[in-house]
Image (tube, rainbow, N blue to C red; front, side, top):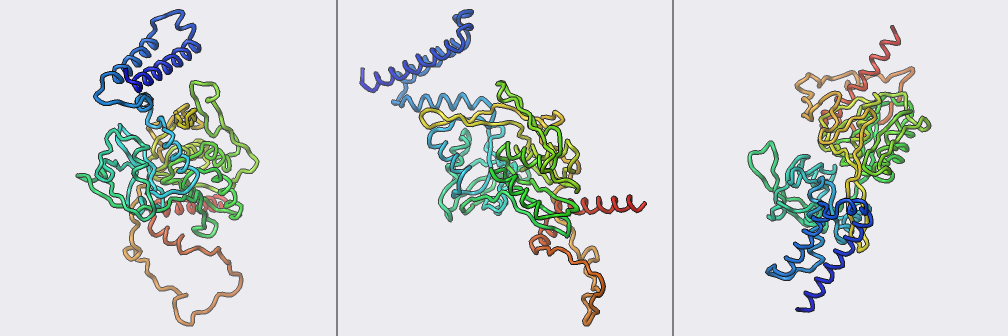
Length: 432
């Protein structure tokens, strides 16, 4: 027998011994009651297959490759968000969550076994190239994505800034697949941006939930006193840290549940509550969502909706109501595992259903001002017009970017009009 073959069989024997020992340690009562239990039989079948492949397969295969393949196969029958990460893949994942990297700027997942775009990240090359939530990526540089793992796909799509990549997209609204060539860039996401849309009406965009998201929103709100209304934009937000979703929700909710999780292990069953101190109240809110709003972003939208703290406007969200944890393994690899489901304060599970907006508003182009008879000449446009006297209200300076956004973003314009209507009705009620 060849030396390599002997080593391989020894490695398999060691793995089997450890697996059997752990199984017996954790399930002594089960083995005592049923020596030929189904789990033990399956372990025997697993080792039989390893030995047959080791002995009879046309080429020699390293035992590590066989074991990793077996683990990947085991996780592939779970949900789309559970997976085994090799040492290299685990390092790649850490880079994507803690630093900047060259890539396209899309959040992807598996839907019915097909590589699918959850959302393009705003401002990135993928977003600018017109990639949309729900797009199916069927080829990367001509290579079929059938049976391709998420991490293999991510690895293929990342690369140095300035290099190009061609992906083939299948979109529901298109009759046949089409190719999109995108130039990679450094992906570095600023979690929060804020501005005034009009005096008293603020806009806060949350792109994802990072370690400082809640703190950034709180700082922005403190610079915006006496608000008449706030629009919280969670569109194209793929999620992020559960704790940050809770903290962001807590900024607007005074009491009660924010979210609760339920898993098999007691430590995964948690309830997160709101606290009155530090809460921002006294103004109405609109939350914007769409099909790219996922995970942690859905926690925030669901909590504000259940507490009647905000009106949800837009289109149905993605529908990911599960919690994952990373379990590092001894050799530097890791297991990313779904350990719990989460529920909104009222007990709703939005898994595979999404958050249904209170007011459904599709993203359409707003009508041109010219068609509405809006190009009037006013007093201020006349030459030598009289300057105002007496008490003149000096409003907050509105940036050109805010004005441009309102012209091109129908959902945002609708949300602002809704907030302003609120103020008009409240004023009418007080006058009566």
